[in-house]
Length: 213
Image 1 (cartoon, rainbow, N blue to C red):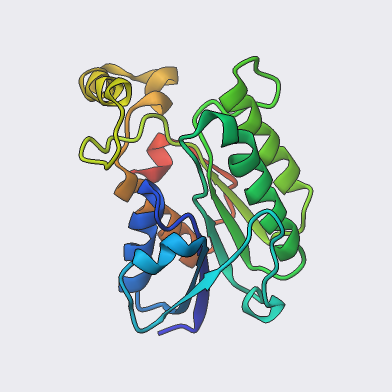
Image 2: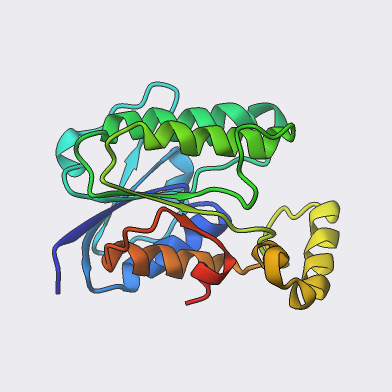
C-alpha cells in the first residue's frame, strides 16, 4: 500500500464523481483532498477524504498538501457565459499554485482540443492544454473524451440527451481516424485517469483507445 495523495477538483461533476469513487476505493491513495465550492459538502464522507472549500476566483491552498500529489482536474460548467472563466480560468489559476510542487496534473479535456480552431469550446480547451504545458506540473496528462455517455445524468438538457442517443448508435461504426470520436462512459475516463497516474504513465494525450482500460 502506498502513501499517495490525490487532489480532486470538480468532484460534483460527471467525470469528477466517478474519479472520487475510483480514488476512494483504491488502496494506493492514502489521502484525498476534495477542493471546491460549498456544494462539495453534499458529497459522501469517507475516512480518507478531506473536503476543502476554495474560492476559485482567488485560489489559496495550503502548499503542503500539494507536495508530490496527483492532481485530478475535472472542472467544468454547463453555463455558456461562464465557460471560459471556469474551464480555462479556474483550472489554470489552480495549476499555477501547483507549479513546482505536484507529481502530476491529470486533466479532463475534450476530443478535438485545439487552440487554433474556430470552435470556441475546443479552442479554449486547446489553449488550456498549451498553457498548462508551460508550467512545471510533473507529468502532464490530458484526457480527451468525445461525447460522455451518461444518459441518467441530473439536469440533462434534451439536446444533450439526443446527442447521447446519436453517439450510442454511431460509435460502433466510427473506425480508423474517426475512432477517437466514439462516445465513452464517464467511469471509463475516471478509471483510466487513476490507473495511469498510479502507473506513472509518461504519455501526455489520451484518446478513446487509451481510456478503454
